[in-house]
Length: 265
Ligand code: GLP
Image 1 (cartoon, protein in one colour):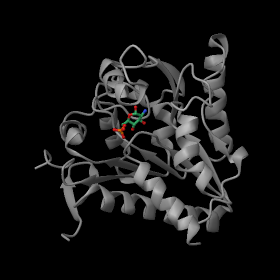
Image 2 (image 1 turned 120 degrees about the vertical axis):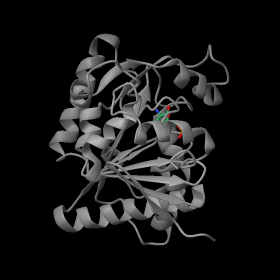
Image 3 (image 1 turned 180 degrees about the vertical axis):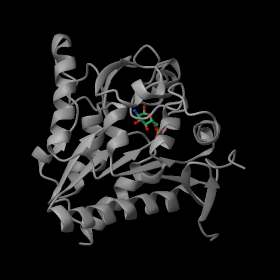
Image 4 (image 1 turned 135 degrees about the vertical axis):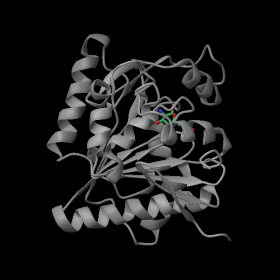
């Protein structure tokens, strides 16, 4: 099997793996390492987690490591990036359900340490709930690691393309948001039809993501190649949300497979 290759891209550390399995293994190993280091240093680790198809294999590997005793979530607290809004937690399409299926039910994480934004919060209380989520993360000392995927429009979490100036976008807290047409089109995969897609969400803001002490951006497959290239080689702009990661380049590792890296040159 060909080895991974580091790639020189301005303002970014990029590691290209031969396939999605190898990329997922690398991401899981890095998460396990951060957990071990943070627990050794502070007695706890705080992880920001992502949903979508991309991290499923990462969660499989983390669960396997817990099963073989090489990793424990006993001292881990988690915060998820986002949740559809409104949605019931037991709805199989909720990100709470996704996390239960792919990770929470398979590892030794205490239920009261697993935070997912509440898709049932009443409209008038949504902004207050979002602010509360940021306060919880801040009170936990911020995120040791944030795992990210990328939408085909460059979104991170559900921070959709925006015409805000970069500084304002980068400072934004957790908030309710309308989904972008590309995001809704991609969500048909889960919801079955465009009419069924829940058009709004609550998402961790860019401020909290950029403040994470380590950020792993995982992107795999050929569909991500054009946006990965725009995010890494185009201008840093809120209209390509992931490009803003380049403002904290020293804390970000882009973990790609060859198909996702195909347009980087
Ligand atoms: C979803 C999630 C994001 C995710 C992205 C890519 O809508 N809100 O957090 O990173 O879109 O998803 P996938 O990994 O399925 O391509």
